[in-house]
Image 1 (cartoon, rainbow, N blue to C red):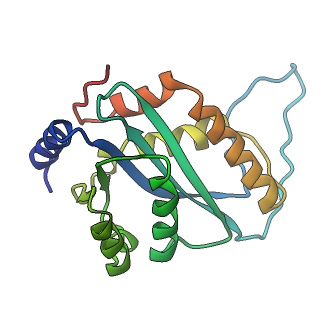
Image 2: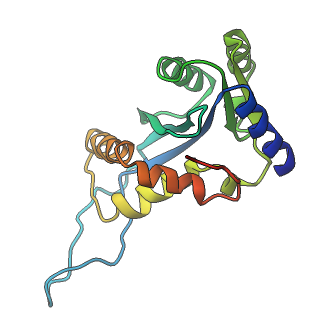
Length: 199
């Protein structure tokens, strides 16, 4: 699917009165992302972290744009020390359907879990949900990438988590903070090459 096809898909979604849902996965590690920060002169900040651990927090998130393009909502799910697979994606989609009603165009990449027969069969059963794949090697087209970038390089910068419970609570807290910021959610959509007019 090229950018022209994607633009046509957005027009079709608008004519059908359908929501647009952008979805993607990512992960968080216990080790903090260290960035320059403020501190009293002569007192270099020290971040103490847990080392020699490969445990991670897998995450799925989606931005849902309303049919009238006047509302943007963020949804997310966290899965401690787990890999995202077809079952995880289907589980997330079932919960997402409780919050996003009516016809939807689901836009995501060609991650194997997205193309899995079980996931595609589930979407086919919903009737009102249509799945479209973004072009290959074009993560910049998915505004969810901006959500991950913001969480990792802004809100969670220099934040230390000593176990997965701490990391999950931190990610959920920052995710909920983003959910309340309409300005930021809209900026994630606007800072993609896609032309998406919001009201």
